[in-house]
Every structure is written in structure tokens, then in C-alpha cells.
Image (tube, rainbow, N blue to C red):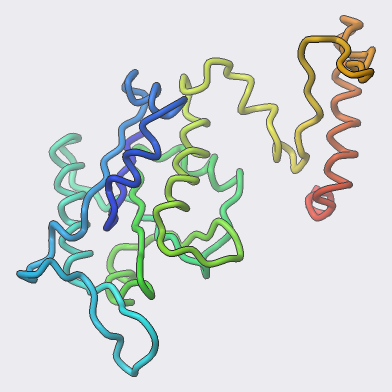
Length: 233
């Protein structure tokens, strides 16, 4: 998987994703990450990438040309690496997009190249979005200062589904939201702490009973914290 992030703050992306599981996956060449600075592709001598919106309104809007030139640079990089000219899937991070889910993460994890477009200020000129964006995605019903944090959230979630990224391949299969259920409670040593014991069933070695207990606990936890998920089952 090759991730590209079109952004005004490439250092934010690089510093946020070059550690832990994602960082180790990049060291193993299981995935790659390139953060491309949109300012590098503006023709404005002052490196401006924004202007006032037509019709008035608060704030500034990112202009068309730098975004399109950055996109073409990404396409050129993909073509040089693969020998194929293609229009990659481009995710624009926006509060009005479709809500990001585990199902969406699994779908996007099938892509060979995935591009994220991070807006800033009051957003991006609609003409740029019409030209390059294929997916409009939100990570929740709230507003952030830019698309960088949502892009990092999505890259983290997607990367964990790429074979080899997680040491234990079963981890992704049995986590929360698999089958629209939250993950069951987990315990480790010691068996007792401050009078609270690990449930006996987990110490029994009886795998069928353990699985039945975990399923029951997943249902109860989902019912308590996310009853909306049960309605989708």
C-alpha cells in the first residue's frame, strides 16, 4: 500500500505516522508514505495558496491551481514507480463527507495507491474537488482546523488491515466493529488485583466456553455503549 497525502503541513503527517506499528511497517516496506506540500506547487511568488471566497463570507479558501498541480505531481510519481498512468483514488477529508467506518477501511485497504487531500482554512475551491476527489469522508460530526488529523486516523486504521502490518494476524479480525459488535473485555496478569479477579472462564482452558463468553460480553458491551450497532446486525 502506498499512501500519498496532499497537505500544507507535511511535517505533521510525517511526524505523526513514523512511529510505532505504522513506522515499523514502513521500515519493512509493507507500506509507504509521502506527504506532499501543496505550497511547493503554487505559482504565486509569495507561496500563497488561498484567497477570499466569491460572494463573501468568513475565512479564506484554498485555490484551484496549487491543488491540481500537486495532484499531477502525485500521478507522475505513481506512473514513474509503476510504469502505468492512472487516476488514483483520492479521499478528501471534509465534515460533510460519508462517515468513516471499519467497513470503509477494509475497502480502502484493497487499493494499491491511496491519496488523501487535506483542506485548510474554509476548504478548497469546488472546481479542484470536482477534478480530483473520488471520495468525500468525515471521521465524525465535528469540525477540525484541517484534514491532517483525519488523514492520519484513516491511514492508521487502513494500515492495520494490510497483511503483515500486525504481528498477530488475528488481531484485526477480532477487534471492535467486526460483525457490528464491540470487542469483549480483556485481561492479563495478575489473576487478582485489589480484590478483582479475572473471570474464571478465561482461566479454564475450555476454548468453546471462552468463545461463548466473549461473544456474550461483546453483545452486552455493544448494547450498553453502542446500541445503534445492534440495529444494523
